[in-house]
Length: 584
Image (tube, rainbow, N blue to C red; front, side):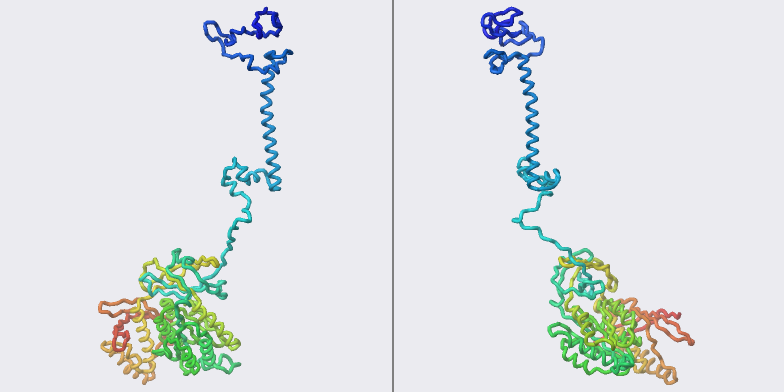
C-alpha cells in the first residue's frame, strides 16, 4: 500500500502515512502506476473487465468527507453521491411535468371555462399545438368559430316545394331535335295557387335527367292564340232554370264579351270565333285576328238559331284551325254540352287534342254540370268550369280569365332534344325536374303522342270535313254540300252523287229516310302515303243502330283514298272501301 499524497510505502495494516499523515486508501498505487488498470498483468493479458480508476483531480475534493482539507473521498462516499444524483433527476423531471400540466390545465380552464380535457386539447391554438406547427385536420374541425373580423358563412335556406302543370306540348319539330313544353308553377297540387313568374336559368331544369336547350318566359317571345267555340244551338235558348229569365245564350254572349274585354290591351293575343248549332261551319265566323274590338262587337250580336248541338264536330274543327297557329295556344268552349254526335265523338276529340298537343278548356252553363265537358278538359290538359245563375257571373268570368288567359301569357317555355327515336303518331314520354334557389319540383312520367307531319294532318282534316259534310248532305238530300270533298274525276264521285240524289231521295219519298247514326267513337287506325302522292287512311267507327227493334252496335273498318285538288285547295276522297263490318 502506498500513500496517495507523497507515495511513501506503508505497511499492510497502516491507516495513516508515517511521513505526511494522510489517510491511506487500500489498493492505492504509487504515483508512477496511476495509469495502470486494475487486474492487469505485466504481460498485458486482460483477465477481467477493464475498469479505469479515476484520477484524484477528477473528484470533488471539497466534499471528500475525510476531515482533512483536500483529502480524497472514500469509495463508499462516491457511491452514495452517485445514488443521490440518480434519483434526483427523475424526481425533478416528474415535478416539472406536473407543474407544466397543471399550468396548462389552469390556462385552458381560464380561457374556455368548461369542457373535458380531450375537447380542450382538440381546440388548442397553433402555438400550443405541436410546437407551433399548424393544427391537424381534427383540430381544425373542432376549432372555435372564426372571429367577428372574418366574413360569416352564407346561410342556405331550403327551397320551397312547387308543382308543375304542363299546359301544352308541341312536338311538330320532333324529327329536327326539338320539343317545346309550356308549363306553369303552382304552390299546391290542385293547381290553384299559381307562383308568380320569375327568371329561371335553363340549367335549373332537366328533362329525363338531361339539360334543356332553351328556357324563357312566354310573355317575352310568344303570342297566345285562343279559339272561342260558342254554342248557339236551340238548347241554348232555354233559361238554365225556372227561376231565371235570361237564356243560356244570353249568358254565353255575356261571358264571351267579358272574357275578351277583360284582357289587358298590353297582353299579346290572337282570337278566332267559331259558333255552331246543327253543323260546324266550313269556315269560322272570325278567323284568327288580334282585333279584339271587332271580336267583342261580333260577340255582342250573337243569337241562337234553334239548331242542334254539333259540339264535338266544332271542337274538332277548332283543333285543326288552332293547329295552324304558332306558339302557345288553346281552345275555350262555352256550351251546355248536349252534343248531337254526328261526325265526331267524345273520344275522337280527346284523341285529336292529344295528337296535336292543344288543350281544351270548357265553360258549361245550365242546371247540371255536364260530365262530358269535365272529361274533355281533364283528358286534354285543360280545365273545366261550370257557371250557374247562382254565381256572380262577372266574378266567375274574371276568375276564368285569370285561370286561363293569364296562365298562358305568364308561363314558361322550354325546348329539349328527345332521345327516343319514334315514328309520327307514336307515343313518347318524359319526366321534368326543377331545382331553383326558390323552388323544387318534379313531374311523374308524362306521355304524349308525336305529332304527324303537316301533310298527314291536312289529309286527316280533309277526311274529317268529308265525314261532317257527308252527314249534312244525306240529312238534307243535297249532294252539293259534300261535292267539294270528293274527287270529281273518280268513279266514287259519281256513285256517291247517285246514292244521295236518287236512292236516298226515293227512300225518303217512301217514308224511309236515311238516318246518319250518331257516332260513339271513331279513330284513324293508320295513314300511309302512296307512290303517286295520294294517301290511304284506315278509319274505324263505332255507332249504335236499331235492328229488329233492338239496340245493337255496328263497328266498321273503312279505307279511304285521298288526293290533292289544286282548284279547291283541298284533300278530296277518291275511293272508299269497307274492309270489316261487325254487328254485336
